[in-house]
Image (cartoon, rainbow, N blue to C red; front, side):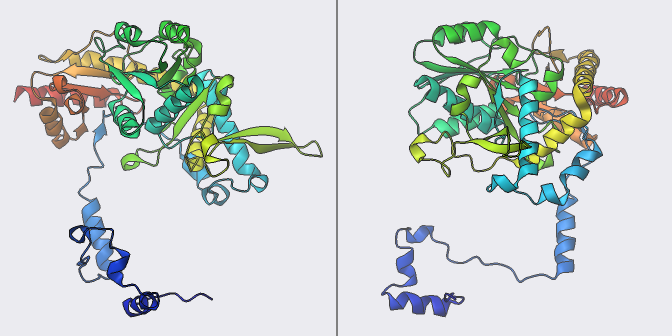
Length: 445
């Protein structure tokens, strides 16, 4: 059994044997950047730790009525999702490193892929990604590899959180990232068409966009294809219960955040990025793809058809360094969609749209409150323009028990008086009415 140095004296003794000191180990780190000690307080008893953590947790507002969206939504999750996903055979199975003995996990992933293909109207889906933002980056990389080009156009009506992630990922890469400014809350077609050329790998857009406006991208798909570029559409999966799919619009790759498919908001994760694409792009997809087959006795089985990660093939041939397929989150999405079914998803999407329309009418009837954009169609989100700073109003509404919306000035400096309001099927007419009354009271004081 190998010797393990458990004390500082033992470590110094081992280092002395090879002619080194503790300082030699950290010589590459400037002395002023080295940790001189953790200065930890004395340990507490289990009871004291529990009490302390309970006090900290009690500071969180968990009783707010949520009208907050911006890419992450408070949807109803059937109890069966958690009950089934927490079964030992699923909950303890991390990822199919030995796929031949992981038939249950592989079948769950296969069903997930099949559902994502049906949702998006595209041919193939992978075994899931980290979240909606990394899914956009992976789609961009796919497009550049497929076209052998390095220019990407993204409209600023795409979720700004995703755009920050894109900028972070591409900062040190040889990529020309062109951002076009939205036009009245919609994708800026004129600017995108002006930027399109034979160097463009992809055009990235979103539907519904960050402001909740519903878009139609068939013309952009045609224009992108005319110069050899691909169209990438980020979409909100619940909306696909009633909206035209990315595939029907001519998109080559569809991505999105799967949190709304049976995953709680959970202070930001873990979440689920989904991706689907045309069959011609299947070998460019990151992560894993599970396929259906038969064994030597003719029985139905499942295999990892494609594993294009650095861990599986030569680095120069890898399509991604994605290390996990978020299998448990993908399972929750599969269970959620199975429980709702086609009609249930359509009904949920319609409820979101109808209740958002009702909230829009109630809130814009308040003196001083008006819509920022004159969008003909929106899904479950819309932008309100207030007579004062939106972040201040939102803060005061939190005191009244409402998370009323998202202050857009955080990402759009010229929209300081604007907030993004989201309404899901969970919000009731009385709750919407009480929000309207609370907002009017705050604005009057």
